[in-house]
Amino acid sequence: KNEVEQSPQNLTAQEGEFITINCSYSVGISALHWLQQHPGGGIVSLFMLSSGKKKHGRLIATINIQEKHSSLHITASHPRDSAVYICALHPNTGNQFYFGTGTSLTVIP
Amino acid sequence: ETGVTQTPRHLVMGMTNKKSLKCEQHLGHNAMYWYKQSAKKPLELMFVYNFKEQTENNSVPSRFSPECPNSSHLFLHLHTLQPEDSALYLCASSHRGGTGTDTQYFGPGTRLTVL
Image (cartoon, rainbow over all chains, first blue to last red; front, side):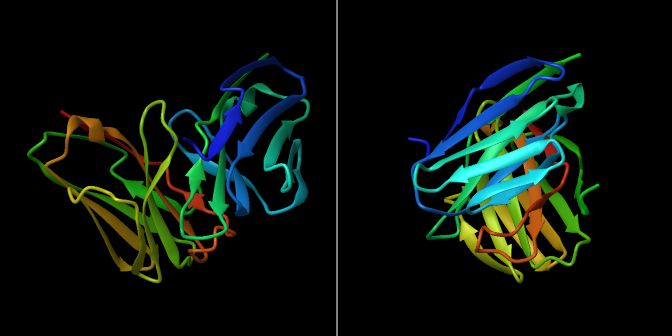
C-alpha cells in the first residue's frame, strides 16, 4: 500500500495547454512537497504546502487538507516543462518522507 | 546548480568491490539525506543526518554504510552490493531536518550499476 497516489502516471499535452497533476494521500501530514525531475536525474523542489494555495510563475499548487488531496497546475505549458513531477509528503509523526511514483509530462511543440 | 554536488556521477562496480559516494553541500544547511531511486519505483529515503547525527535509518541493509563527518559532507560507503542495488542515489540537504517543512535541495545523483 502506497501512502501517496499520483495521477495520471503519464501525460502528453500540446504547448499552451493547461495541465493538472493530482496527488492523493492517506496519512495526516505536516507538509506536502511538489518536486520536478528532469531527464538525467536532477530534482528541484517546486512547492512546499501545508494549506491553501501557492503560485510561482506559471505553476500553481493547491492542497485540501480535509480531502487529503493536492493538485499541481501548469498554465500555458511549454516543452521545457517536460519532466517527471513528484508529490512527496511528510507525515505528522516521525521523520519519514513518502513519495508518489511521479507523473511523466511531455509537452509537444 | 542547487548548491549540492555529488561525485561520482556514474559508477559501475562488481559485487565484491568497495566504493564510496560523496555529497557536499555549500548552503550552510544542517540536515543531509540519502535517497535511492530505482526504475519504476518511488524515491526511497535511506538515511537522515541532522547536525551530523543520524536521525533516520529506514531499514537499509548494512552493505550501505553512511558517514557524516560534518554538516557539509555526507558519504555512502558501499560494499558487497547486489545487482538489485543498481539505482540512482540522490543526496539532498535542508536547513534543518525532522520537520519536513523545509525545502530540500537535491544533488544531481550518482547512477550506480552493480554487475
